[in-house]
Length: 318
Image (cartoon, rainbow, N blue to C red; front, side, top):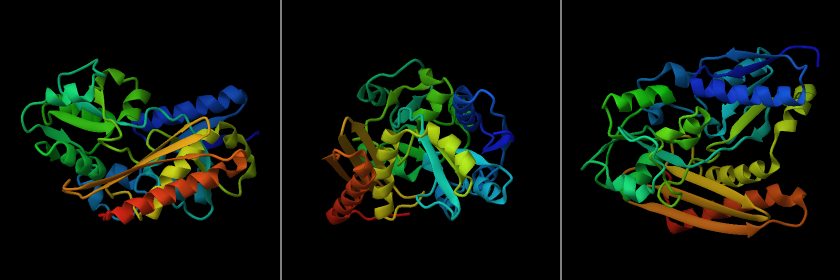
């Protein structure tokens, strides 16, 4: 492949670390490949003074990058899958899903390092009526239900910005994706990981998504070498569930699938924004003998799980 391939990415420390992982993985397979990283500012990077749920539309962390791909300015892009809408723009495809790290949410507590303790112990050590930083309606709604005395405060910014605000005393603790801390080597900041039964993660959390143009066969052939099929099976179930529930980026809905052997387990949750009620469902299926049928089976599992939540009376608020 003689031409230099341009990789689109956001400019945050985490986004660059994720892109670097993909670049190194490609170069390990193809030492002669030439790759250039192109930083692109998105709406989510520019508008930092408003809660995420007030920002209209979907994909505000990826849309500008996708436009550059369609224009031909960049050849492919690296995203956090959880930032991507369930429906991609016409002409683009998910070339690879890879390198999933712990998908759970992490509680980071001011003054507490090197934790990783049991979540019950950590949450019991918080001050009365603690100030908890997070802009995620999904996190707020589920945690309000589990901890009614917690006070939730808006928190925007990159990982380093959020940690800095915490350390300055603006919050007693913050809730962030564990994956971001792990990718940046900040695992010592994790006081505890929140179990899925307390805070079900966002669909696709912890997964790297590599997106490219559908008609660029040369690039697709290269990127598909990074695709992890087992991860695609998990993500298919998760995103099918959120799509069936009609859940956008701002809905209080979570989904997590785990594949072990041929057993696929899926947890889904939906919550009222005020935390007054949380609907949860766990389901499991044994995948068919033929792996060619696994994605369809995963999709069916996700759809059925979503329908069960709706049958229970779940109301999807955005």
